[in-house]
Length: 447
Image (tube, rainbow, N blue to C red; front, side, top):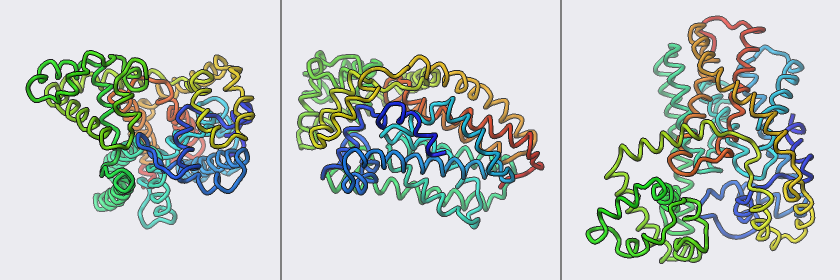
């Protein structure tokens, strides 16, 4: 199964990349931490990439990534279809791999490869009795996956709540549910503490995501909340320096964040990243963000929901900004590992020869059908009193919604945000159908 998950990498001639890959691998190759994203993904790859040759190291890294996701898939399948022979698992899993976005993310050197695996592993852990063999390991693995991307912590919490709610409706004992909630809380506290500790130690900023005000400011500026707050508060209690640059701030969030020529934030923050002056500006942006939400909570909520709904409808695979943005982003990586120049340059991504329309056409329909089936199948599972199926479907349904809402509230709508987990919908629909057709679980089956 792991080999099948690497088919896109084999087709590309190199593990798939994204502009942000450089930042994550910078942690692996260097002696620094990332400011605007979790560095734990790069840290996990560091032992491999620092000991193997540059090319072999990246192939080993993506192969281990595929092996991890393959193992999680098998664990989840054994949970939803425990009596199905392993030989009968291969064909449905191959179908999921061939017609969904799953392998295109697993083959990419990005923590998004782990997002769907996180959802499944949290479901496995939360739907299992604490004393059952392997449950503690499932919680531990879920905690590790929650570390590698800031949004994973939110997804972790959302999935735990969804599974516990489904099990409560399925009449699992309250004491047992409480013990699982405590286990989840311990993992969440450990993950949050790890982020806070490393950011505090490196940057003196004792928070989970110290750069988050910058991204939320750009989002609220585009939505109009920040400009209106500045109109009301400049000359009164708004930061004077922020008011002085308000007219030069691009409304487009991506330009405000990354456009060197158009945005003053680049010179004020990105070119001084980690320096006291940069943090002073981050604090000013945070003040504007908090003030904007405090003044217009309904507008903020409305915009977040609107963005979330639009994100739900955008889940095309291969939203990777290659070859144009990828090519310039990879220069930093190639500078520290020159041996990567040729294989990266010769990959289909960088040559622009990936057949995107075909891949997107093949993967779009199963994703859409899978999502449309989730609610009807959840209703059927509830009527069957099939706690196992109901908790799986509830976990994936809530994960899809939570993922879209986080993107809608904090960023622009991009297909890549949703495509990283949309494959879970056809996965759940297919394996639930197999469970009902061939295994015929008794009412109340599952814990």
